[in-house]
Image (cartoon, rainbow, N blue to C red; front, side):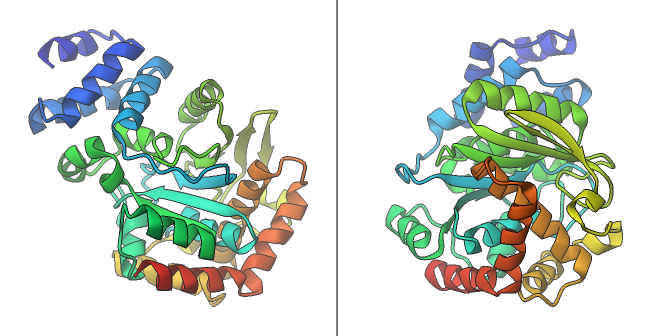
Length: 331
């Protein structure tokens, strides 16, 4: 590690093979927390390269407990975190709208490291019991159209650095890696990022990985479609900037999206969205993210059609029905 740190301090980059080996060594416990913390700090001070990210990703996927859902065309919807906005769990809620619209979702998530409530925090608040039991995951997918994979159970390297990430309390390159290492290997993914440099980086990585993707970034810094400002989306075939008005939606305020001061408060907002008792801004932000996820799955559909599907899923109660069944199956 000392040699690698010196190289990185001198602004050198790792090749793909070095990055792969480094992360495997971390997972095997070869480095102490101070060394891992120093490594994370380096990647806060300079951007990570495509080769470094692909090497780290390959290492994590090689070591992960793979989950095979066969040829089902499922999607993962996730944000990188690290935007400092402390929103409620928008992408997690969007997953249930997509499932309620009749599509399949495999959500890969973790506890919040740089936010109060990550996807796993809200799942725990709902009473979900995390598992690697493949039969129960298949059952969840079959009955609900959605399965949840708690990252530390499937990715030992992420578990190995959990305490360092939590103690730092800021985004690290593991925030960047998290969306790329879903052990079910989804062929479709909607990803929200907190900066335009990350927007470009992930586009390159997805192109190299053969994943059909949508990468979104709200221009005021949210790592999802926040509707607080215009947002940019990259798909394999195009890039485009949208305004909320182009979706026939009103602009939100940061207050609309605030996730509260505890996982309990964030989970309560999540429940209110699913029950259609939340504010219009809260529900619209979830609908917008679900709609673009549907378009990633169905590129032939116009975004207006996708918004109609996502809205119908929420307002008809279908998404809430999926949530109730999901909780029943996964307790």
